[in-house]
Length: 462
Ligand code: GLU
Image (cartoon, helix red, strand yellow):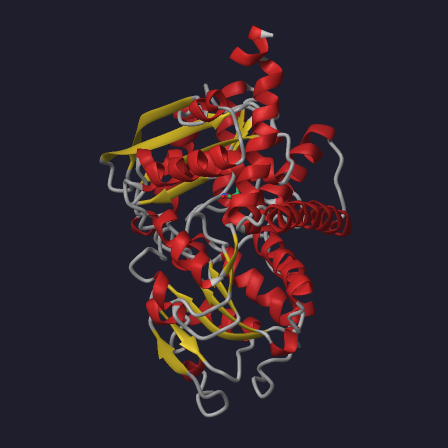
C-alpha cells in the first residue's frame, strides 16, 4: 500500500468493488455513540417554533407539529444464547404523515430514549420536506448495546422489533431504514420477519436492504455522497478551490467515511479524521481509503498510520474529538454524535463552514454563537438527506418491480440534492437567513401548505 502521496485519490476506483454491506461487527465498531440528552426533543421543537414563526407559518400548523402523530413503546423479549430471556425497550415514532408515509431509520444504542426518537422523527419530517420527497417523518430505536450481543442475539432482537411494530409499519404507512448501529443485514432480517407475519412479499416495507433482497444500488454511500454534493455546491458558491480547502471529519462511520472519500477524490485536503476513540491530524492530509483499509484490521483510526509502519511517511498528531472540532480548517464535518457543539464549545470553533452529516450535532443555543461569527452551516436536514433520498429511490424501485442502474441512482440523487441546495441557499440569500433557517422555512412552508389543503380553521372560516 502506497501512502507516499496521501492527497492523491489513487484508490477511488477500487471502491466500486466494495462489499454490499460491511460486517456487522465492523459497522458496530465504526458508528458512534449518540449522547443526546433528554432535552433534545424540546430543543428540536424550539427550532421549529422559532423558524416557523419567523417564516409566517400559521400557529395552527406549528401547534400540530409540536406533537408526534403516534409513538409506540414495546417490550422486546429476546432469547439469549445461554437460554435466558432478556427484555429490551423499543420505540417507533410516526411524527407527521402529511406529505406521505412516514420514513426514517431504526437505531440500536444504549442512549436511545423516547425524547431522542421523537426529535429524530421530527427532523426526518423536515428533511423529507426539504428534499421534496413524498414522505412524512418517522424514527425508531431500541435501548441496547449491540456490541454486547452475539450475531444470533442481534438477529433475534431485530426480528422481535419487527414483530412488535408490524401493526404500524407497512409499505404505504411507515417505512424504516438503517440508522446508528443498524445496517443492511439487519434490514434484511426485519423485512424477512415482516414478510413471514404478513405472508406476502413486501420489499417496499424497509429500505437500505442488501441489494440481493431488493436494496437499491448506491444506497450504501448515499448519505456521504449527498453531503459531498452539498459541499461541492457550497464550494461553487463560495469560490473554494478544492486543492486549497482543508477538511476535518469527526466520525468515520458510513456517512463520514464516504463523504471524506468522495471529497478527497475531488481534490479536497482531508487533514483530520476521528472515530469514537480519538482522531488524527496532519496538515499534509491523509489518504482516506488507506485509513479505511487499515482501520478494518485495527478497528481504530488513531494509530492507523503507526500500525503499518508508515509513521515515518506521514507525520501526524493524535488529537481528541474535541480538539478536532476546534481545528483551524476550512470545512468541519461533524459525522458522529448528536449534540457535540453546544453553547459551551461553540466559541472554540474556527472553521468558517460546517457540513452536518450527523443528526443534530449542533444544539440550538450554539447556532446563535456560530451565526454571530459568520459560520456558514449546511444543516443536517439538507446535508444528510442523501440517505433518505436513495431510500426513496429504493422504495420506488420496489413498488415498480424495476431496478435502476447505479448511474441512474447517482444522476437522480445529484438532481435532488443540487435542487434542494439551490432552493434553500437562494432563499437564505434573498431573505438574509441562515441556511438552517432557510431549510426549515422551506420545509415548514411545504408541510403547512399540505396541512392547509386538508382544511384548517382559516380555511373553514372563509
Ligand atoms: N437514518 C437515515 C437518516 O437519518 C436514513 C433514513 C432513511 O433512509 O429512511 O436520514
